[in-house]
Length: 506
Ligand code: ADP
Image (tube, rainbow, N blue to C red):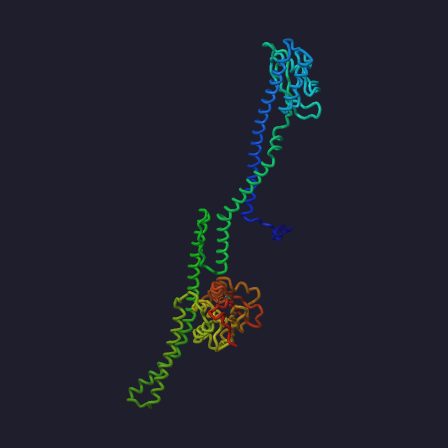
């Protein structure tokens, strides 16, 4: 905002993500959250199972050590001989090797170590726990940090029974790293692979579904709307996608067909307005030949009443003049009728020179064209063909010529020229009037913009002429470099005939 509170348009270019990219980003975020949550739950469950499994294993190992010891100690918990101690130590060593336990020890009721593997693993006995085992009271499981490296260890105790009496305790020590870490260490890569594959699958499916169901129909709609924007009103979208988009397509189709109908009506009513103007001119114009005809008829009647005193040649001359004037009236009315009749509006291959000639013929009898000279260049040979409706193009030229005559107050020269440039045909209508003020150059094409007095202008001529030309893939512009007066240029694609694009004869 400026100090005066006027908003300044933000001209910085913003990067706008497409609909598909935005939805896919959202989908990626949701997928990630879903995968992380599920992964965490799965890890937690796997960790719990692992922990339970490890505790069972520890108890089993401690019980196995206790059973071995019970066979070698007496009922006071004493080891019978040196050999028995060696034997027990060897049994503990082999149990440790087979099971992966990191230490086993056998204690008497007074906590003295009877045997241990490895030998120093019995130094850290926890007397209260050992006591409670000997007394037959749980707990038999204990987690602790290793006195050496601080790693977590699981300790399981089992009572040594001799003849139904607990005479000591056996202890198994196992490594017990955090279960989640263990699961990750074992299957981390597999999990990562699954996560990536899952995300890839969701994103590619999302991409495919979005492209098929949303992006493609929207592109089709964008294309059709752009076509309507350049004057191609015959746009019909056929969509079998999601119901919302089909409803949008139906609404679009209804809109284009109703716009096309309204446009047809507008073109027709503008044409009728120009027919009205021309008819007023014609009514005035046929007064002269009618007066001449009446004069000749009076002469011939008087001659008939006086029993034919006129020489034959004069009588024939009077009759020829009557015929010529009647033919002139007939031609004027026929041209006007032809112009006002709803014409065949389908485009066909047309020589623009013929269109110029028919517009000229229609306007020639008009009083306001009496002192207007229309020059047509090049003359005498056909112009490059264009694909248009002859009736519509005549309407455009009549409009431009009427405007030119009005601008020159019915006096001056109008130059109609045609040139062919790079596959385009350019027809220009230039007059010697005052031209169009720079600030009005765009406005004159606005519907209902007119500078003419009420009843003389509808303000629709140029806007409808432009829309007609655009519907044939052309443009109607004002030449900003016109040397004098106003110059309007119709630019149309040259129609490719079977022998290629027709060129102007030199
Ligand atoms: P209308 O002729 O009914 O006014 P148009 O759309 O044909 O409607 O023209 C709009 C306005 O453009 C005219 O009122 C006039 O002011 C201006 N104009 C059109 N053609 C010319 C011309 N050849 N010279 C000067 N002004 C023109």
